[in-house]
Structures are given as C-alpha cells and as structure tokens.
Image (cartoon, one colour):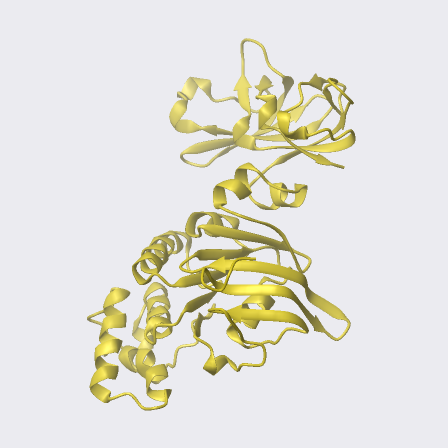
Length: 359
C-alpha cells in the first residue's frame, strides 16, 4: 500500500455487508493521485458499492477508506472532497444550465460571493465546451450535452476525486466514443483523480490508465489496460476482458508439451512456470491466423463469417476441439482472401500467445 502522499484513495481491508449478503470482501486498493481508474466487472461484483463507499453514500462494515491520506469512515458525503456524476445525470429540469452547474456552489458555507459563483460556473462550462449554453433549459439539450452539464456541475467546486457511475450508458455508440475522448481530455486538463464504474470492457480499456477487475466482491487483478488484456492473471480476467477461446488441455511434466483435448501436443510458453496437470488454455481470436496453404496448427470448417467493417470474425469448427472465434484485420486482406462458410481451413498461432491456467 502506497503512502498518503502518493495516493488519493486507499481501501484498507474493506468489507461491506447487507445483512447476510457480502457485497465487498477484504479489498485493498491504492489509487494514485491524478489517475484515471476504472472499476470493471459484471453486475453484482461490488464495483458500485466501492464507488458509493468512496462517495460517502455507504459506510464500510470493516476496514477503512482513505481520501487524500485521511480516513473518511463516518464522514458524510457532503463533507468529502468528492463529487459524483450519476448514470442518469440527476439534473434539475426546472433550472437552466448555469443554475444547475452553480447549485452546489450556492450550498457551500461560508457563502461564496455571487460574482465568484458566476465566474466559476462559466469557467466550468468552458471546460466542457458549453460556454454559450448557460441559459439553455435542460430539456433543450441533447444527451451528450446533458452529460457535459453534469460534468461541469461535478467539477465546479474542484473536488480531489470525481466519481463516474456508468455515465455513458445512456448514449449511443458514436456519441459514447466521442464522450470517452472528451472525458480523457478533461481528466488530463484538470489533473484530478477520476474513478469510473463500468461493466463495459471496451470503455474501461480505452479511457483509463489503471483497470481494477472485480468479481464476487473481490479484486481479481489491477493493472494497466495493456497488462490486463495481454497478461490476464486468471481465466476469469481472460474471459471477461476481451474475447477469448477456451481450450481444455493437460500440462505434462518436465520438458513435455501442453496436450490439447484432441491429443495435439504444443510447446509450452515460458510463463507456464512448472504448472502440471489439467489446465485451460485461453487464446485471443486475433492471435489466430487462417491458413489455406502451408503448415497449420489446427484444422477446421468455417461455419459463420461476420463482417464488422475494419475486421471480419469467423466461427470455425475445429476438429476435436469445438468452435473457435478468429478475428482477421480486413485492411490486411483482399476480397479473394476472405474465407467462406463451409470451407476447410487451417488455423495457425504462436504457442507463446496461449495463456495457461490451472483447470
């Protein structure tokens, strides 16, 4: 655990129970100052409970939560240096844009001068590129603009930490992508810590510089997006973050191979580290190459082809192993190279691309 001087948020042996149900169990987490952190996991994994404990909307059953080096157990939400952007924005429809943004400033004690409130409100609106929208009504704003109003309201009092509870879930894909870029830019400009809760793996990988993968109330792995995707610590992480093919296998001792369920023996990757016995191989779809002529590792029959614009996904029924998902970069292909459903095809991959986990 890092020191208070380098971390904006720390969880120390934190648990949260609701009666007989344990939502979060034994969590230790350090969030560095100025980081953009994503809490990623399936519904019910405990990520939103963690966010609410940071915000002060829930209190830990055990352990302590620290913000800026200070323990905040029992400190109410309104006294924490934290603001939150909710999934549905929670804007006041009877107030205009500027009044929504200024609302929190007007509640502060001692009172802030009206001129200062006006200056800070306009500054926050400029930051989210809504400088000319101060007098607009909320119902006159698009979904993306409403989200930016919610962001301006959250940053106007300069919190140490900004909490984002699936803030892009209500947006369409194109707008969501644009807002991901805007949030990254805003976080860099402000230099404050962002904590994002999401179940969308693409959102977590593309926006954050630190990803915390959770399941069943526990942290499974913390790392950069590249580490989480390229070096998953468990089969759950490999399965949940991105797409993967799962292959039952047996790891033979010593210099022996990894033997797939169809009997094929493959060279062990160096990272197997002495594991022996029943195992599960995880292999990313983009690590597999379709081969018409020449040596291949496996053979199968193309059952489906899905056109995705810049890429093509194939489902291939591999002899003795079942369905494999294969992703090909369409920009590297000419039309004649596309495989057709029903075609027999070879599959080739580097054994070092395999991630091996005990079964």
